[in-house]
Amino acid sequence: FQEPRSAKNRSIPIKTGFRTPILKPQRRQKARICSFFRDLLERELAETIGFPRVEIPLDDPGRPSIVATEARQIDRVLGTAPATRSLRRRLKRDLAAAQARWDAEAAAVGLTSAVEREAAADRRVDELLKTASRMPAHSLLGVIAKLAIATEWSELEPDADGYPWDFIRGVLADLTALTVKEA
Image (cartoon, rainbow, N blue to C red; front, side, top):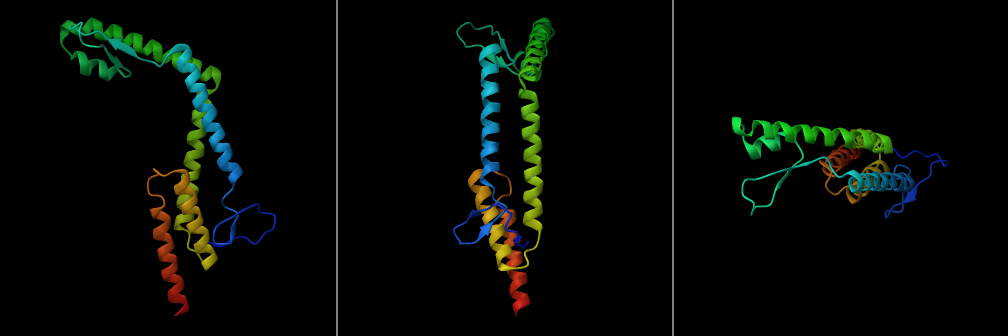
């Protein structure tokens, strides 16, 4: 993993004094903006039509009702006894209608495509990070670039699975290989 020498690459300085073209602040900013607008669309939709859910009435009026967002939750709360069959069917129909309305409205306002694009972008970032973590560095600059990626990513996604550990393992292997070459 070597740092490109092209002066055309826009980059930001990192604390080591080196510059890496991999860390593009404008991309991070775009991702945050997209996420903000997706959240805004979802919040507006929830305020307008409500999340798809149904309230399950309980026999005890002193207990608060239970909200179901999936059909299996209805069965879990009411059981599968024949006495509750008609209520379960009605609640499941109501839930399916609420979900269909949500899906139609989400598609109409662009929420569905925003979620799909965000998921595709997340998959692409994961692919690129895995590739970068596995690509061997051929110089100390390459090792530094991998560490910069790891620290930047862990700051942005502290709960990301495997990061920065995949990078740290890769950097350890790189340093070991570079040390063996020099010996």
